[in-house]
Each structure stands twice: as C-alpha cells, then as structure tokens.
Image (tube, rainbow, N blue to C red):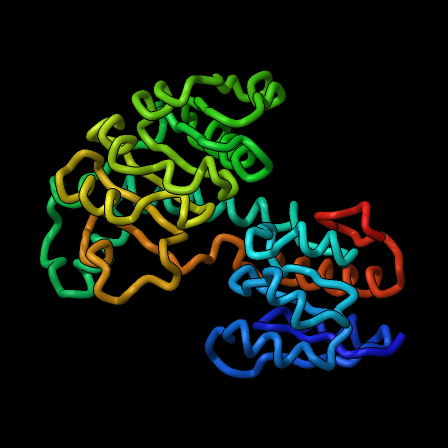
Length: 325
C-alpha cells in the first residue's frame, strides 16, 4: 500500500505507527494552532486520505478542492463537521471513533457533578489564595449527590454510562428524556422516562448527552433555564452549541440555577474574558471528556485501521456511511 495520509491535528503516536507499518506515508500538521480550512486543503493536495479533527470543516467546497481523497476518518465520535451528502455523492468512506470514548466521557461527567456539588474548584482556589487559616465547619458547604435526581438528556452510550455510575455509585435517582426510550436502563437502573418539561422541572442535576442537530442546537436557553429548579446544576459534556451561552450566564447571574459544569463551550475555545470564568459556581474544562491515554490510543488505532481498510476497498471498522465501499 502506498500514498500519503494527512493528519490535521495532534493524535496518539500509535496512529502514525500503524499507518506507516501498512506502507503509508504520513504528513502531520505541526503548528500549535488549528489550521484554517484553506491550510487543510493545501496539505491534502498530495494526500489520498485524511485523519481529521471535529474542528475541521469538511464541506462541499473542501471535497471539491480535494477530489483525490479516497478515505477520511474523524478522530472523534462526532461528525457534524462533515458534509455527509457530499461525501456520499463522491463515494468517499467516512470513519469515526464511537464507543471507545464513552466511558472516559462519562467519568468526566461524574467529575463535573462532584466538582459542582462540593465546590471543589472554589475551595481549591481559596487555599491557593492563602485563605485556609483555620477550620470553619460552615465554609465551602456543598450538597450530597446521594438521593438527588439526575436528569439526563440523551440516553445513548454516554448517557447510559453516566446513569449507571450515578445510580450504582452515588445512589442517585435517574430520570431521562431522549429521542428513543432505553428500556434496558429503565429495567436495570430504575430510570424513569419523563417529558421534556418534567426533566427540566424535576432534575437536581441536568446533564446533556445528545448530539447537536437542528432540534438540539440551543435547546438549553433562557426559557429552559427558567423552568429548572433554582437549586439545580446544568452539566454539558456533549457539544457547546446545545446551550446558549449568553442565556446560561444570565441564568447564573440571576440565580435561576445554582451552578454549571461545562466541558464544552460555545464558541470553542472560549474567550479569556468570558464571565463564566469569574463565577465561583461554574467549573469549565477544555473539552477533555475523552482525554485519557487509553482512550486516545484506542481512537488512534481505530482511525488508522479505518484509513487502511478504506484505502483497501474494505469496510471500515467504524463508518458513518457503510453503503459506500
């Protein structure tokens, strides 16, 4: 097998190893910044395949500019950055990396729940400012997870794992709203399927785990935050576009909700002067839901095998458009 594979951002070293062992040459983006679409196109001119990040815009213009590409794999579980109809029209197989990152993202979601409920960030910052001068049993008071109601919007792979960890690990009550009912989670964890309105009004913690679509974009907005409990926390480890950031800031300022834990923002990266960063009841992480060595390695392995299979005319391990092989 011969040809060049362009890799548009940082990926685990195993990705390069597997591609080169298959006889392919690799070309990587070396700068410590995201490439523009023009730069991705320029670097793809000599390539037969691309490993892309979800930040890369692969639209109709991109495909028209890179007609020689024969396989693409997103180093991500999401693929909203790719014009699938154009890829299908050109019969280009598109791979992605589902399932392997579900557990690590669920673990980070639980970390955000704990960080919010126990004021971990503000307590840590207080120590760093030298404010821990004596023991005060009434300072940095949080709230227990046990016995609280966790509402999950989107009971897919990640949402199901969050529900399992919250129910079995912290004895939380689980309610959810999703495009499809998940009877396995209902039977195994006693999760209750509820209406969208009940999800908003009954959750002590509301965690979003849905893909971003026309229906879900901006679904958490001024109206939805106003329907939540004033003691509730909003958690988003899915996509930043699911919530309207200005409305979230307003809801927090007006104490319509108690706090928020975000692994994703809108836009990304967030500006350093974003008001959320100055709020003691907000925890923000830089989209690290799947950022463990184990998960990143598995993602790299899948991407490499997707490309090798795609260039060989065989079905990819995980593909979005399996009919175009």
